Amino acid sequence: MNVQELINKRAKAWETAKAFLESHRSSGGILSEEDGAAYDKMEKEITGLTKEIDRLNRQKSIEEQMSQPVNIPLTGKPGAGTENKPEKHGRASDAYAKAMLTAMRSGFHQVSDILQEGTDANGGYLVPEEWDSRLIDKLTEENIFRSLATTITTSGEHKINIAGTKPAAAWIEEGEALTFGDATFDQIVLDAHKLHVAIKVTEELLYDNAFNLENYIIDQFGKAFGNAEEDAFLNGSGTGKPTGIFADKGGGVTAVTLSGTKLATDDILTLIYALKRPYRKNACFILNDSTLAAIRKLKDNNQAYIWQPSYQAGEPDRLCGYAVRTSAYAPALEAGKAAIAFGDFSYYNIGDRGTRSFQELRELFAGNGMIGYVAKERVDGKLVLPEAVQILKAGASA
Image 1: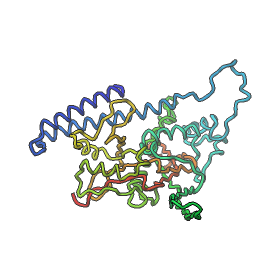
Image 2: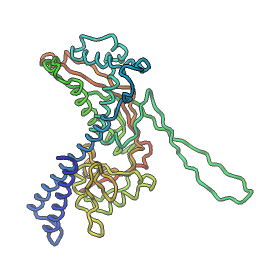
Image 3: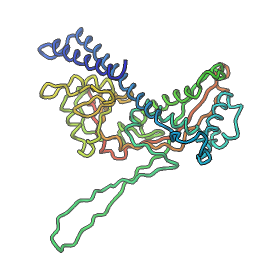
Image 4: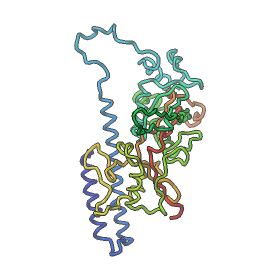
């Protein structure tokens, strides 16, 4: 089933769920326990379809990137002009990638001299450039936040200057002296927090040339890094990991605090308009699927649902006209906790320090007939302008 078919199926399921909700509510607007369970089942199906649509859209985006031409079309005789083709060196060369694969298959017993160009301080080997690029693509597929934030590559501590005061215009009489205010600047520092993940591969698979070790490594490490990063970019405390947008210190600005955990349409509208107009242009929501389930039942004054499912492939679902992104790592709507973020997340900066590296862990799993590999990266993330992200928080008591 393709994306459009899934979208159509979800739209039909949503209309059925709305009709069911309207026809089975009591005069007090409450569902019976049996009807509530039936509606929850419909909603679960809609949520599952939404996740599958998002996954296929991300997959399509990556496939389109991978299908782009990587070199100049052949217009002359084969072999002509090859002497002018720039030769790749170090981690970018095909020889480096081939040597890395050979080393990994041999448990790093066959290590080519070319890999010495990519050794790191801890005895590991830097990931080939082409692998690193594919790993980042995988991270983007697994991690919704990387596609929304601004990513920069740093070689050391990266400082970002932010205007602490904004210039203001003033009316003056003709001939009157001009006045100048003092400009002040704040500074955000992107450091580097180490993240590592280990996977295990059986010796039989490792020595089987039919097993695509390269793809397996990239897929497994990409998923693990993507999950850990997204959790940190959303919830990180800033101590030993990035600072998340939901963090009490360094995160977004709390604009709405509920009296309990029950959401109303007015709460969503207050959150939207708490965000200054320039930021609303590229704004979207980030929330948990369980929170979205509660929002789907909300209506405006015209009795129209404020959540609008996407009817077109590649387009996100919308809430009051703004795109909705769900993440399993966004906090659920629980007493005393932040639950919904709304803002322009391009003001969150992700700093990738250097490149990733691989290291072998043979002795650790030797008794199981397996070989372990550990991948390491250094990354940080901070919200540069807290006012660019507004937060809705549940009250202390339900």
